[in-house]
Structures are given as structure tokens and as C-alpha cells.
Image (cartoon, rainbow, N blue to C red; front, side, top):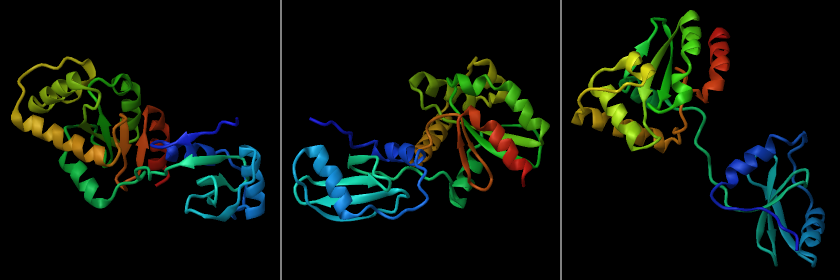
Length: 232
């Protein structure tokens, strides 16, 4: 029996990964006859394909069959996938969300006219172990506007409350020593930020958001961000 991937909640991620490996220039769907041969070969019996048509995702088409349900196939006929497709969060945020970020800043580093929002978790090692990269931003005249979002758990939440309630700033964040009171205002602020970020799928810190709304994920994006500013 031939096995193939049956994806449900993560099918969109799989599609994106596969699309990145395709080299075909064309975007037209395979013919019904060709797809019938492929599917019949997999199931070891005759399968009748009723339709093959584009689905709005570059490099992939939907396949409707009479006997075996529905599938997705890439235009090079290298992958056959069954399951659901979920839209991934946009890699760019709108003006309204940018204004929300502007109201949510916890502390700033640098005095440059250029700036980037940096979303960090108090327990994010990659976030704290980036002092050299912070200096790189400052050297290029880019101000960092930090927003604390403790997605890693309850311990991180407690640290975020203390940072916000006591105006801990970059010093408290970098040394990891979170002291002081916990206030209701700080809790509400942290909860609000987390809810809005979750709604956008922005939960894997560090996250960088440029003034034009472009979103970058991970510390490895820093060089790209600096280059992006230099090109403007």
C-alpha cells in the first residue's frame, strides 16, 4: 500500500515548503488524463478525475475525483496531497496595527530617526543574547522600540509584569533580573499585547516589524533588516 501525507492543521506550511523547491516557470495545471494516470498508479485501481483547476496558491491545483475524494497536486506532478488548507498570517501588518504597536512600546534603545519594533519574550535567550546586534542597529542610526510579549509561559508572564510595572527597560531585560511590584495596569497591558499579537500569529520571538509594516521573524533576520533600511 502506497503511503502519502494526509495533512490537516499544518497543510499550508507543507505547501509553502514544497513550493519553494519547485523550479517550473509555468503555472498551468496538469491535464485530467495525466493526473488520472498518477492517481490510478497510487491507488492501484482506475480513478476518474472530474476536474483539475488552480486554487490561487502558486504552483498548485485542486483535483476532484469520482472515487477517491479530493486532492492537491503541484504543476510538475511531483506531489499529491490530501487535506485542508489554512491561510497563514500575513507577513505585513496594516496601519491600524502599527498604531497599536506604537502605543504598546515598553522601552526604547537608541535615538535614531529610523526605528523598528522588536517583540521579545523575557525568557527568550536569542533575544537577550543579541547585545552585539543591538549595537549594530544603533551604529546604523536605527532605534529599537521593544514590546514585551511573554508567550513562553507563566514564569515569563510574571517577569513581563514586573518589567512593565517597574519601567525596567533594557537593563532589566538584558540582565534577566526581574524585581519589583506587580500591578494590575501592567497585567492588562501585557494581556492586551499578547491577544493582539496572537490574532496575527506573531508569537515566535524575537519578531521585528518595520515602520512600513513588514514583518521579520528570528534573530537571523537582523542583517536583512539593516540592509532593508540602508536601501531606503
